[in-house]
Amino acid sequence: MTTAQFDCQHCSTSLLGKKYVVKNDSPYCVSCYDRIFSNFCEECKEPIESDSKDLCYKGLHWHKGCFRCAKCTHSLVEKPFAAKDEWLLCSECYSNERSSKCFRCRKTIMPGSRKMEFKGNYWHETCFVCEHCQQPIGTKPLISKESGNYCVPCFEKEFSHYCSFCTKVITSGGITFHDQPWHKECFLCSGCRKELCEEEFMSRDDYPFCLDCYDHLYAKECTVCTKPITDRQWHSECFNCTRCSVSLVGEGFLTQDKEIFCRKCSSGMDIDIQ
Image (cartoon, rainbow, N blue to C red; front, side):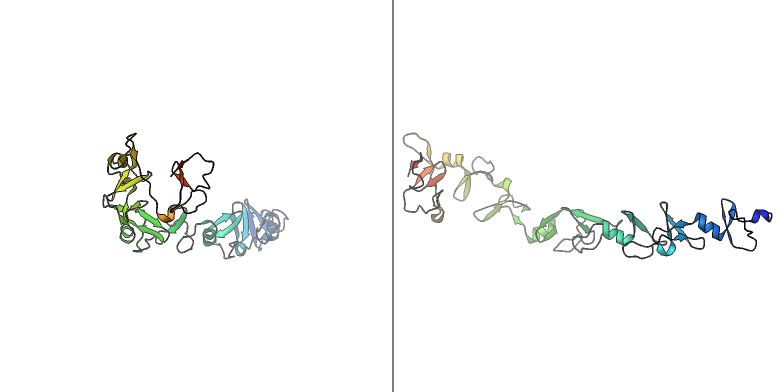
C-alpha cells in the first residue's frame, strides 16, 4: 500500500502512525469513522464509537453498559434474554411477566420446567401432590374436594362411603336411603328394578319401590273402581298449606294434584276437600 493509499478515505489525512478503522476495505481515521458510521444507542441515544463495543439485536444497537434488563436493570451481556413489547427482559423477569404462577407455592413456573394443569390452575410438578399422603399426583387419577386434591387410594380411605348394594366406593354423587349410602345407578325399585334417583318412590319393610310397583303390590283397592288407594303421609312439621305455610295439623284442608291448601287459601279453587 502506497503512502497515498494509506490516507483517510473521507478527509484524506495520512494515517501513518495513527489509529484507524477499516470499513469496506477502506481505512478511516477514528474521528471520521465515528462521525460517519457510528450507530446510536437505544438506551442513552449517544453514538457508539469505535472504541466501544456495539451490541446489536434485531437491527437495534446498545453500548455494552446500556444493554440491561428493562425491569431489574441487570446486565444482559452474554446472558439469556427475551423481548416483550419492545422491551428487553432477563429470563427471570420475563418468566415473572409471562409465565404461570404455581397455585400451591405461588412462585413462577419457569419456562422449560414441567407444569401440571387442573381446573384452570397450574402447579409445579413437585407441588401437585395429594393433600393426605403428600406424594406427587402427576398424571394419575385424582379426586378433588374443597380441601384439595387427593389420589384415589387416600380419598377412599379418608372420605368415601360404600354403596349398600354393590359395596363399591361412591366417589361422587350418590344418595342416602334409611341412613345408608347408595350409588344413584344402584338405587333401584325392589319390584321392577328401574332407577329411582330421579323418581318418587315409597318404602315398604325398608325396601324402596316405584309408585307403580308399590300400588300394585301393597296399596288397597277401591271397592267401586278397583284402582289402588295411595295414602300420602307427612311429618307433622311439614304438614303445611302450600300457599301460606300455616300448619294444617288438626285442621280441614283441600288438595289439588300433589299440593295441599288451607280452607282460606283454597277459596274459589276447584279442588277436593279432605
